[in-house]
Image (spheres, rainbow, N blue to C red):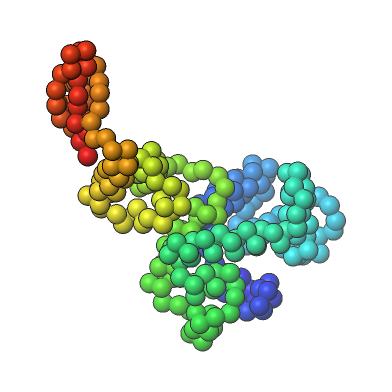
Length: 241
């Protein structure tokens, strides 16, 4: 939840955080607990360092910005903390272009005023099913936001393998990016592979392959058709596509 006084547009809204962010928060809180701090639901999420005088239990925006700036510098980078917002915005632009999140939802998560913000302000809360859909859309966007590779799910592994297969048969990366592989059936995916391979073979004018005799059995298992044996001991196999 982002309070109005912290919002650039000076209005109250909410956003989400992905798996990588929650992992860092959990590790940070575990470290504080190991150091003897007793954490409760009333504890500030971010803790003061040893510098300065604590006038308030919670960090001010200027101190948060200071710590972010120092972390950036210690990483050997030269940029303002605002660049992180630009990074977030660009990632959501890419996700929107791929149909992973709608423009109104993207605006709302960024803290911009728009149609959904007006509805949220008027109703005080959005219906739970809408929030769940927004959360799911944001989750799909995290692959453009997060920098740490997490455990590969079965679905992600399938999509990765499909992308590698498409690349192997000659599809360009920009062509692959335009494909909605998550909703592509097995039959349609196989057709994509066959069409590309068939096109490549038609381009070089050859649908046959010259092989040694000991390769025949292996290629038959891969779908090739036996054509003939040449006097030199080589065999002609017809390509499967």
